[in-house]
Image (cartoon, rainbow, N blue to C red; front, side, top):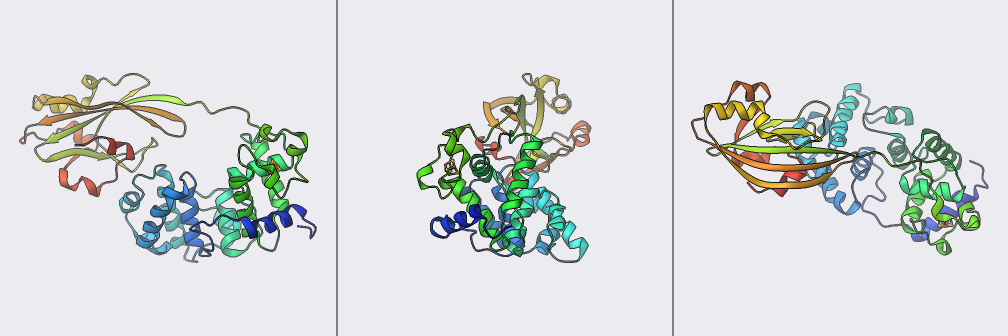
Length: 350
Ligand code: SF4
């Protein structure tokens, strides 16, 4: 960066006076910064802080995380959503420990960790190691596209590259971590969707402000298509036992547990058409009861509508071969707490 980086100087001077007081501020341990950044990817600070504290108390360093069972990690993550974050943290911890060289200290090596993108790698390296690399989150995109009048859509590869290259050209050698945080703070406090330009340290150089078109940035090409999905869950009970399985494959909620799933795709799920339920019904005429219907749940690209039912079997019912083949097993009801279920399941009382 050149010494006359007006943008960085103005931003840092503003940050020294008006920065946000956040629980993570001042942290320099790379492992802790990594965990906090991963939690904050899709979680508000106010919700994420409690999870973060529990997580780093339970797994105080990368070795303890790598040595855990995946179920233990997912259980701590329960309710936070976007579970691929937890699975990636866990996989990356194993990657680090297997390499045997401690937490990686270069941008390229941090970026190569599973689940770590450009932003997270930039945040870890600038905050923990003082490396002059940019970390641009959604707030940073808003500030930069407005201030420099970037016309490329930020939901395209070219738009993202333009903003990242610009940010990298601006990040100073001194205080790179503060610079990255300052951009996020300005985007969170001043350059908000309806910006308060009178309070902004960049007002004299801001292109969007000069044009009087602040809210025209950042430009976007279009919204991601959201698909609908219908699902039903049947809580199959046998005396005090409940039938569950671990979700595998590439679908949502991988690694979490579920009751008997009847997946309808885009149509209403047909309970009579489910092989596991049929196999249990063959051995015992169960009683089916509706628990809740039409629970809505929105994931990043999917809108789920989920129904819950309960099927009560007699205490002697054998677990069918079909249910075993699909990974289902009985657990005592009082031990259900030991398994991580999607947060949506909390909406149904058993
Ligand atoms: S002048 Fe207004 S639009 Fe420009 S960066 Fe500042 S707050 Fe954002």
